[in-house]
Amino acid sequence: MDRTLESLRHIIAQALPHRDPAVVFKDLNVVSMLQEFWESKQQQKATFPSEGVVVYESLPSSGPPFVSYVTLPGGSCFGNFQCCLSRAEARRDAAKVALINSLFNELPSRRITKEFIMESVQEAVASTSGTLDDADDPSTSIGAYHYMLESNMGKTMLEFQELMTIFQLLHWNGSLKALRETKCSRQEVISYYSQYSLDEKMRSHMALDWIMKERESPGILSQELRMALRQLEEARKAGQELRFYKEKKEILSLALTQIYSDPDPSSPSDDQLSLTALCGYH
Image (cartoon, rainbow, N blue to C red; front, side, top):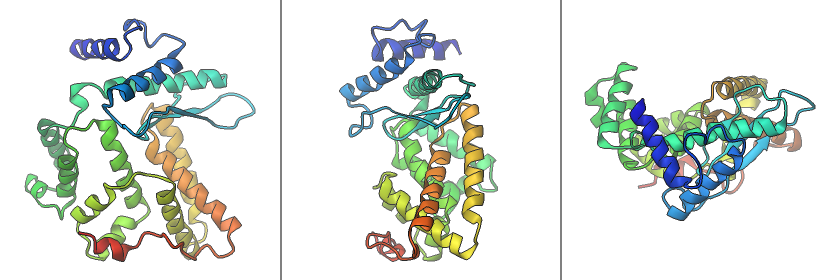
């Protein structure tokens, strides 16, 4: 623990040279410190070279408690976990959670190395019915996870999290199951989606999937949205990274909006992702 604290102080001294590491998390100006940290990262061009904006979002509310989210370059999202009586307090609390996670992300232990991959695969095997031999077989879940880690060697956990969130969402909305049924290999799927970021186009495609599910099972959208909102709140209060839950909420809300605004939501757009095209990808 002492070694971790010393490493954090060293990181703070490098990224925020004008700040006192001993009081950095007690400073009320934590919002500007978070911005300063990521601007420093951009100057170093160490991570997320195409993005450099820290984005805040406050939930509409007529009174306390207030909720604020902050999205970091690369897409990781955090929120205030304390009960905040003002929007400014909620914003500061969210920024503090994000800053702590940003600093921890700089620790050597948060970077994907051969040792990290070995430990992660062993943990995955222990939590499933798989074996270590599965790690060399990309057709298994353990093998696919091993392949993803190997493909992201040297990246930090926040960088890796963006790709993981995409696959969490693909599993959640049933796309991975559909891809398996069309005989696409896990390596093909991973290679294909590793080229893409989670953007409005991908959200629209996933929203279309849920519109089709709603037509088959009326009421499922509202049910999934209630669950996503509950998961998002629980994760926020626990101080966890929120992007997966927040993206679920955004996708489901988009699907509901389109259902009420489009008389024929089943008509796919011209740029809809094609499973056939993906299976032909090599």
